[in-house]
Length: 303
Ligand code: SF4
Ligand code: ZN
Image (cartoon, rainbow, N blue to C red; front, side, top):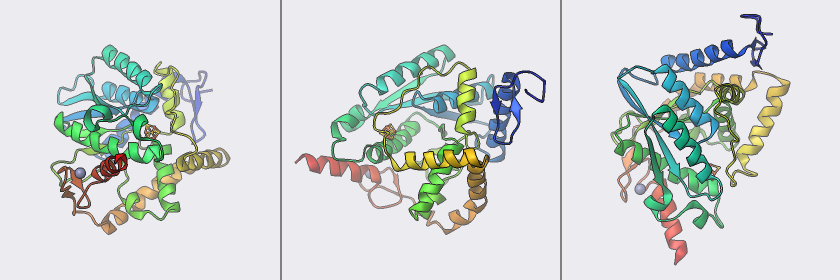
């Protein structure tokens, strides 16, 4: 039973509070607004590009932003989708995203690995770790396309669960540098070619987003990428979910304590040294960017 209005509850939050549909939707949007405000994610004038994949997180973040900035002419919102070329999976996601964008009058921009790099992910994946290659190329393409489209910020649907997993993964692998690049807003402020990334769902749990998507009718069958199996992240996810069940609030504690030490990590990180990649001129922390290294490896393995 929802204590706020004495109607049937739809969700029990990790705080122990149960909420009905109407109170939950209000709570959800309010919490996202608070994340945006306290972390200064969105300025008065913005051209936001939402990175959409067709999954519940990205479609939900797009939906919430449309609702928050409805009627605000200074905050423009459009969508950007990367088609990696994953047969039997991506086509369906594109279809769902197109339907959503058409219904909500959002401009959808699509960029593909095939067009930009000359191959699909399926074609080059054999003998490689799919998510590593995909992640590097997608990140780079999102940045260059967002910049081309005049985007002032790139919005992602990363949530509390994703962030808690990444924090632990970096901790387990002693990858402090990678952790220093996390947080609700990321990317160099001082690099003209870098479009900063924001995560309005930083404090929203996967369970909350699933409930939101369900209540807003955004959940058709959300299929999983076929390459998303047996990954290190999946094992961490399972472990964290078990802990969350035993000790509700665990994920939130991981992320909120991380936020407290993040300024110290950022100070320690070798920042301010963003350069331009000597091959493609994209922003890079080393002489040659990760994307060019990956592309070079793929090219040389063909010979
Ligand atoms: Fe790419 Fe891996 Fe995500 Fe699939 S699960 S879209 S391969 S990063
Ligand atoms: Zn490069």
